[in-house]
Length: 102
Image (cartoon, rainbow, N blue to C red; front, side, top):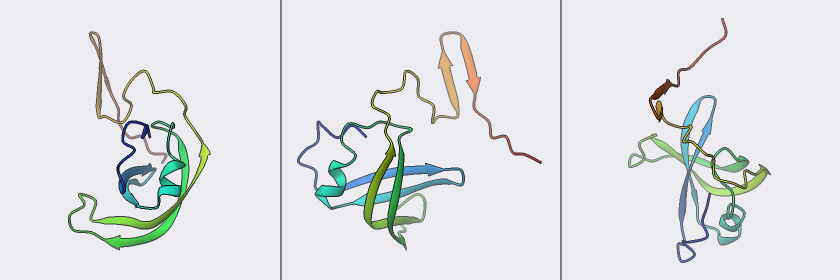
């Protein structure tokens, strides 16, 4: 998460992804927020917090009172956006589909 250009923000909503889907994590503690400065998408983080229902969230729930541990940081922005259902690279269209083991 490149937070370097938004130092005045006191609350941050971070979208987390695992193999089951997405969830938003609300980080209010400045110390926890600073742990995310300088890392980018696909960094591996461990988050501990309280899951609560949140109707305003498109996921229906969110994690609050988060503590964060960066386990494996990505220090450079990825050359392509990998979290979209379609990636257009010149004339090539790559469809990202889920594959499940039988």
